[in-house]
Amino acid sequence: MIKLIINILKRIVISFFILYGFNLLVNSIQIFIPINVVTIGTVTCLGFAGLLSLVALFFLVK
Image 1 (cartoon, rainbow, N blue to C red):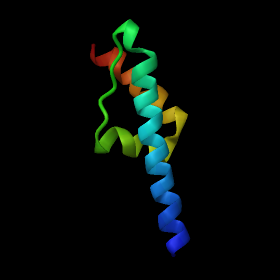
Image 2: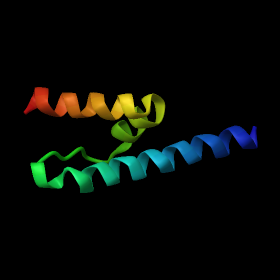
Image 3: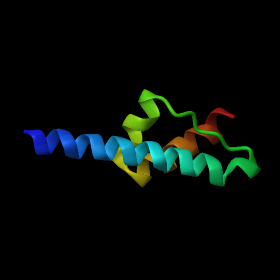
Image 4: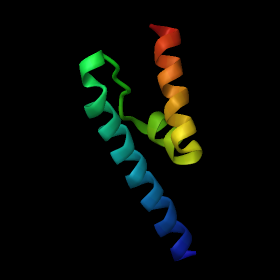
């Protein structure tokens, strides 16, 4: 049970850094994905596919 909790926490931290790094890399082309519970949860569950879906939603809403 403890290993499962640690694994989930690792994925959450990695998702945070993925979103933060993505925002740093694409800052020059005016794309910004906010870092909140929903976006971290999406990237945690779906991985890079979740990040790509968030970018697609950014362009659809914009």
